[in-house]
Image: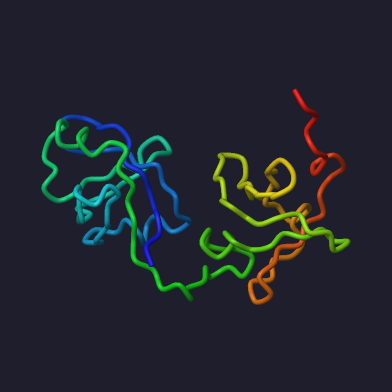
Length: 173
């Protein structure tokens, strides 16, 4: 199973380095020198990591065979993926991979069915669960313990304790 671990940004300098929008909690492991990364679109890869380092809070990446700014710019926007075991879990029991959450049923602490997780949205401040509700407007739930007290992968559900108004239907026009 493949999972996105980053997205190539703009070229940095003239020698083929590029910025990476990191989408993994394990960037040092996923982007280690010699690591094989698959690409989306697939015709741009697979690629092998030559080197990485951090600069001003951003990861800079060098890939084998990418020798200049033009080649680096040609990869801009490419998603970088790795093969992962579907049963693999993060080391911290309070962390989850996106693919483990997408598709889970979402219910309130009182047992009301809310919908199904459609996507995990990663923002700088916090992650959000995008919950599809078939009979109402979709809703974004902050993925923090105060609003999400329980994730039960075995039961296929997430229990939420939403603040007042979060699940209220949006008024028309």
